[in-house]
Amino acid sequence: RPDMYRIVAVVFFLGAGLAASAAPTGEGDYINRFSGAWAGTGTLIKTVPLQVSCKASGAPGENRITIDGDCSLAIASVKIGADITFDPSTGRYSGTYIGARVGPARVSGTRNGDVVNLVITWPKPVQGDTRASMIIENAGAGHLRIVINDNVTPGGPEQLTSDMSLTHI
Image (cartoon, rainbow, N blue to C red; front, side):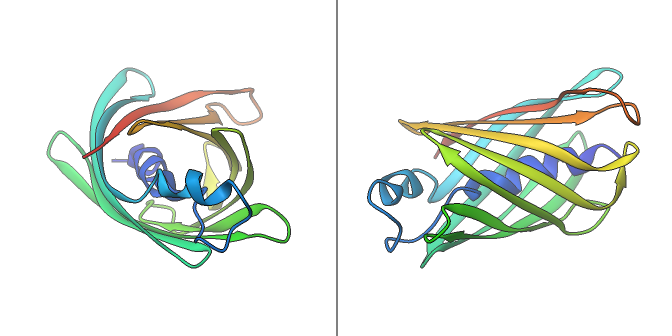
C-alpha cells in the first residue's frame, strides 16, 4: 500500500531520541522511556482516514538504539526497523529507518523537554519532495505520541498525515 511508508516511519522513530547511559545528565532518564515493547493504534490521513496498528521493541545501547517490529493495515503487514544514534557533543540525534517502500530514510533532529523534533529525508520523492517532519512526544508513564507532517501536494504546506498513540507493554 503506497501510504504504508508513513506508518512505517512512525514506528521506526519510537527510539529516535534514544542514547545510552553515557548521555548528558537527564538524557538517560528520557532514553529509558523508550526501551522495551510498544503497541498501539493510530490514524493515517490520506483521502480518507485509515486505522493502523503497530508493535515494536526498542533496545538501547551506548548512544544508540535499534528498533524492530511491524505495522499492519487490514491484511497488509510491513516489517520495520531503525538504527538511531545520539551525539552527546552536539545533542543531535541521527540515523536511518528501514522498511518504507521508498527505501531507507535519514532522520536528524534534537530534543526539547519531552519532545524530539526530527526532519525525515526520504531517498526518493514522496508526494513531490524528499522532506517531512516528525514530532515524538514521550512524557513518561508509558505513553508515546508520534506525529508526521508532510506536504500532501507538491509544494504545498505541511499538514498532518499520521498520528499514532502507543503504550509500553
